[in-house]
Length: 457
Image 1 (cartoon, helix red, strand yellow):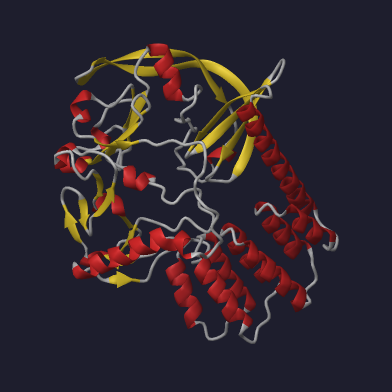
Image 2 (spheres, rainbow, N blue to C red):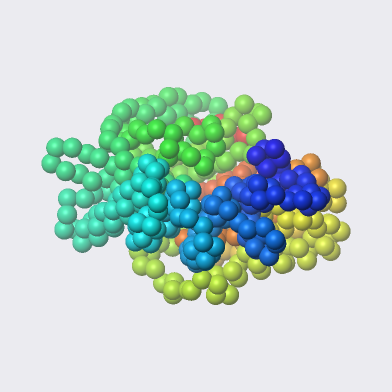
């Protein structure tokens, strides 16, 4: 009951107090850890089970396999595969489908096929998992081909559009248009037809005021329709995804071209909608009365990767998150903050009772500075830094626990550091493609305002 409802603390307590632990109890707690991405505890419990008098069954292997592929741990999948063979359990549809799914999701379709061939009477679900694996890898290969042809200008492909949230690849044929939408948060590809429609926006009447807004139309706006699949993993209130990449079909590019405004936009993500507004996005730049508060740094874009290949487990891959957690914990301890057991996926948690509240900038915790190569008008144009206060650095996971709101990017990160939505809340962030600069105000809470009070699109 506790595990199914996400209460891992109570589930662990009940598990620890159980005088006799059945295999069903072991499977339930391992599955619960895997579901909430608490992979460390899932593997720890699995190892404990192997050392106990009980023998894991097919459902146990299925549970731990989920933890492996959710954690992108192909070596873990191979070890579990080997353990399954050594255990002498029959490769039935439960274990077979779990292994096929694990290998397919990790792009090892040949291994998935070998497992499939050894499954006794594979059911329809197992067949579908293998077909999906082949299909996904085929589409991925097709996307790579489109990219290569586009870069070499040898094909009919156009408009490769990418952003940190997703990218759209438009392939133009003689008489029809189709699109492939890739969503990194769910690691899936979706297909759909390309369409155009008129989009309605609000235009600011005066540069110095937000009081007068008029509705305008953006004709010929390209989009594609899909079911709820691409939105999996996002907020339940999400209605769609829009790209803000540096490409012609992006929303800000379309607005700049149609209304002849500068090629820049500003985002203000709210932490609360209690004031009646849901934050704002400004195209053509941030409001004039806020532009003087922007801390700016050069926006460097290069089509070539300069990062060397790093094997998994190398120290440099784990450097950023571990260094941040270690320093934050040291500073927090000096502020009399009491550490408690970490709650996945966070690496450092504290007793909320020992965290002093700050009326302006959230919980009083160690301040985090991101030092940037640029200028800060608030620091006499020296040592530009994006200062992150408690409202943006810690997350309240329960009534009594607060955690540092930065997580490990895993063994296969796309970049060294990603600034998440939590860190951007109540910060005005401007992307200026005219001058190739990134601007940020740091927390608007210091100024007695917030993104929830902004009125925009």
